[in-house]
Image (cartoon, rainbow, N blue to C red; front, side):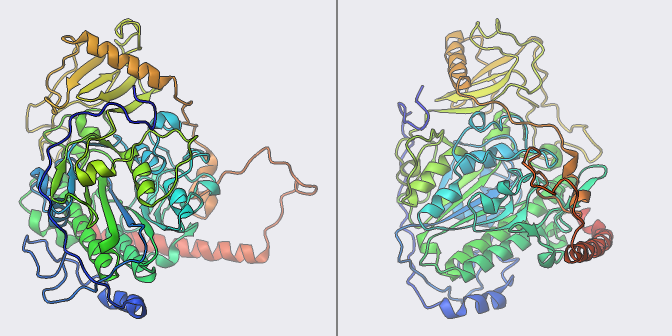
Length: 608
């Protein structure tokens, strides 16, 4: 096994493809007009490029409009990481989807498509691995997600990607979904390396009102500007559009000669399934209502990325930028997503849960218009981006990611030969799993999955295992329109697949190759010896937004903190604090009334 952070014997290289030299643009004077041009420009480009016609301008610019050119005086590239939420493997035009994604198709075609690219099966794990370069077993987040009521967050002793980039002069901004915990102020994005944060702390919520109920009586507002609730910035705008507007503002106000890191974590296309009405126009023929809503949401997301790309060009960043696009996990078929023809779905360790849509687009790529079939994992972005930024990784930090820039840009072999998809020791155990079934090497009741070169091994309960074509679910519930279902064999707790030859996981080879099974079980056992204890604390009632002005936010205080004399008695809040709280409660009441009214107005729209 290759040690953590070190290269092992590489697999065969992927075929080289022809080089497509990118178009270069020269710098123009922008400084005096950035903010003014943004206000004038706004969202006039929404709706461009959805019909499949190529405009004369780039990425939705009206024909004849000249984009402002730009260059950079820094050798450090601008880094733009765009993370979609719950986008299925099939749900992009270039994978054969019926959903129109012209921007994603164009960016990918002119860049490098990652067709052997892996993430984690659910939200928090993928985000934690991106921002730390470490597997879940090395951060304690190997089980489930961080719940809003849990006193839990990304461990504070992990140096994050934005912190490392700040060390070498980057401005760091995050827009969108955090989902890495917030129970303490130290867990907030602005305390983990981001200069600014605008977005949500939780895993999901209403796209317009930004309210989220975790359970009955546990409801609150979830839109933040840095460390405070963003009441003043909430105008009832659909979150995909609102986040894109914020990205445009950031780009307009930043000096493009200074390096910037933008982490754009869109809420779309995660449930609830909501989209502005006009995005349904192209999808009236889709019978399944969830698929229709999902398609509208994805079209809106595609158009948003068009506007982000256009802003990079308009404000002088594009020529020295690297755009990385990724989904955080597989799609959820019951919520409109599709991973067909891959097996399984979000929340599972079948390919449909962990193989993701991903690509890199940049004028700095040496080999453009290519497909990378080398093994790439979401942990790889951490060392790759730090290296591109001319940063340093401390020698004593044990990473699980690899620098794969030359693999992507030049078509060289990947230093990665394996991926630990996960080991979850507290997930529901497989009833028929045992140490004996694992040849005395590994208890196959434990949920785990590992990839080593062409081979993939799963143990325990891998999760929902069907192959689900698009629109396979009826509108009435779990009834299927197809019979592509599978019942796991009695006594089964271990599977082996050659993913290169059988990417759809239809032929289990565990019985045919027991020697390979044993090798992979030993590798699992070796990884498990490096695991830290699972962090999954019980619910804390102090997390209730009712106790925090109706807002989801930090609530935890150290109980063992030594009190100063006179602190035993609870102090009466000062007049100003009482007035602020009263004002906030009044604003909350107005927000709720507005939310109810707008929800009634939108009921027909969200119904597709």
